[in-house]
Image (cartoon, rainbow, N blue to C red; front, side, top):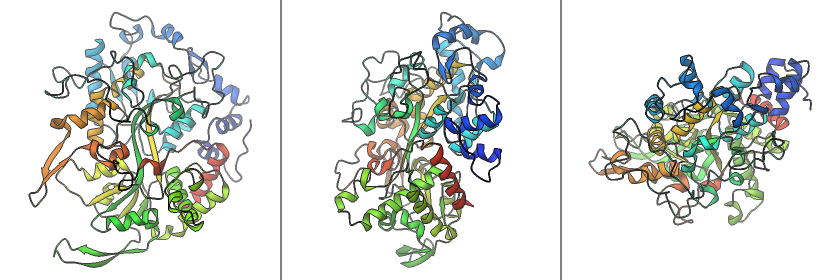
Length: 559
């Protein structure tokens, strides 16, 4: 298959535009670089354990890594230079505490008697999926483990940039929300060097599999079943109808795994709660970005304490993420909502939020994309623009009043587990938003497959995942970790008091801003507390042609 270069684009620009377009775009570019096109790309750098592009036969890995010793460590890691025990990992900013990564060294020493293992990551921090994809597809940077979002996992697989995983090396994968495992005896229980390896004095060791009502059976609480998480598995016919390697393997949920969920969350609106009344901004949803100003009739002056109306100029006080798919998701949801209102949909139809009554985050129809672009352009001049790392800090500092935002980034800025009590809040608008999962994957260029799997398995240790989520305030996909944070009040619960002395208590598992419908105690009344995740949609790889159009319209909006 060939892909025509968009008119007016240099070869370098074409790669940038095609970077998130999937295998077809990469194949088109490879034809520009290599005389024999895609075949040359596939054969270039093929590892001895690869039987097809991105397809690993783990029976062949032992020929490279050697026999296992009595501790289960391949000979390759016991001998040779130090860099054999060093992993190069690409990760999002502010996404895990350094102590957790440093503890991987102690973990490997204690579990396997393998000293000197380390993870290099601080020089590999990215702020968007497009940036990561450009690193591995255009600049030639090589990593062992990466953490892309679900739709980018899909794109990377189609481009041949990641490999299938070995479930036998990932026993902690069973900890992730999904059907109750039949056997959990091989799951690790590690949370720092002994004797600190415990949850607390009252909790004890790893409990039986958490059994919250419905959590492990309903679609929205299952991160392990292939049909519900198509991007994770080559066995999913919806995403990979003709996966590579079918002549060697029958892909299923045991050997077709491509990604291990790391953290998840939603995309919605962060705002200054001392400027906007919650009822007003929740009624507006994404429409708040259209406003040139906002009048709060009940504004309380922080200095004088007087209450009365005040009008705020919103010019340059509004911002969106510097993320193409997220920006267009908000636009498509808002315009789609307006269209259904114009069409006199019944209230029941309006709240269904998906299917025929709502536009998708993954639209390919050009008219819909142009309508979304027009909405963004209609208020662009009153917006500050696009920025991702400052979505939370600039709300705290009042440089911005309202932002498109990721759930965890706002919660990390608010720090509800402290006594700051910053007047910043977060919600998913009525028109809809995104639901996403960031995932641990192994790069095709990785030559330390066993050690990479040990790192991924370590990250999914129940205690380690609990520590990560308690630190960065994103939601964990790990059922045991959720259970630990919910029950281990001594470690994860926060008790304090407001300025007036009244008590304040907070636990992450009970906060709907973090866990949405997962939150303990939320959603018992679907009328008073309507489901949050029903408004959210996973983004998917939309293919080469549509991705190029997204980029073209995004460029016009951004610049």
